[in-house]
Image (cartoon, rainbow, N blue to C red; front, side, top):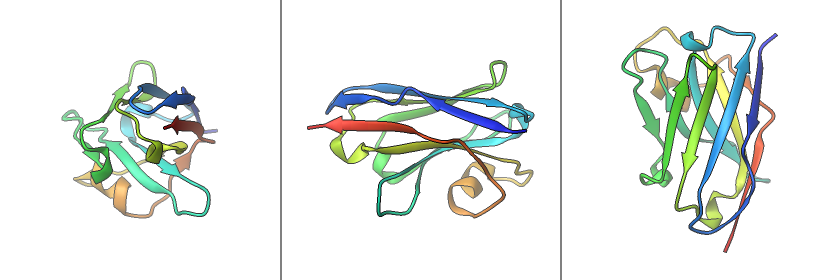
Length: 130
């Protein structure tokens, strides 16, 4: 059974930093494209950042990230990370980890923009106060 468990969300002041983690089990983590998405009540879930499973580890970020976030993965630990800095109140959301098996090229872009058979975690809340 696949499980994705996010952690690291918290209440932080604007300008602060957080590191989110997503611990994966029940899947061959190193073969999965991974990503972070977020959602606020009343709005659709949006992609934040994705990372390829391939050796090049290509990453892909949403425009609003503006160089403030860094996605990374540790395949030995089956863990995905999102380092967030210069946080803004607009970053307040429930942050989800996602996993999809994609064998095609540009997998990190496909996870961000194409619907697919994804695994999702339960989310971790990030709240940024002004």
